Length: 330
Image (cartoon, rainbow, N blue to C red; front, side):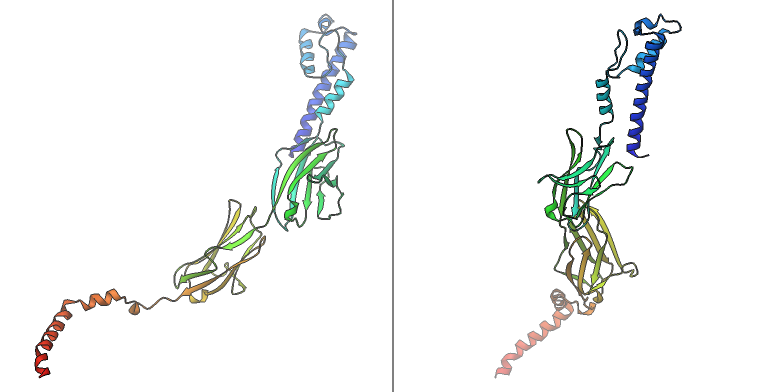
């Protein structure tokens, strides 16, 4: 059941109990007792002390009731009591701080219980400009309007294509005397899109390729985030080699594109495009792996040269060359 129905039912139950108490009082005091006080009612034929106690409990808290010397209801006190009982009240559970993305619809909710015949208005706080009264718009800016469904207690200010300049306080006012207001702070943000490790990223052929796109600030997950490769949308639902994950944390949206085994075909220009911000891009270079026979380092060559099996013949050859050198010179 809706909250305003519960509140309405509780107020009517309280009112009925109080009216029942007054009826008991009038019945006992003016019909049976003929104007006697509550203390004298115990002597009336058929009226017991328990009846007197029941009337006292029923009247407990009713304004204008007199416990001594007869009972009457002060009309002014009773009117004040009814006004207090059915006074419009704002639902404090409604958010007082709303963040929306520039260019995307913004909604400020105001929930009023016991509105009765009063009227709800939305006013821009910084210039006290009246935006809406009831369901009618009182501004030439047609981006502003009120959403209200008959029979509900919600009056929502809708702002189409909001801009950063629309940020600020807005008042939901009820036409009581004095007027009552509920303030809502609106924050319009412009998200930015960044692909980490850009503008260029190198990956090894056969290794994993991981691209991370961050959208911030992002008060809510975008309706979509598309990834492009070479200008074509990546369909990760049909390509089992590619997976995409999206998560929302700390006021930002993170989309991760993962290729388990990168190939030379994954070279090229990649773009990340969220629905609530401009796209970002990065260039990926997949490096071809060298064959195992060619992966020879200088340290390996030096180690082979110092092999004892090769070193001894080389030394003997050098010795004979030195011994024969004088004969060659003569």
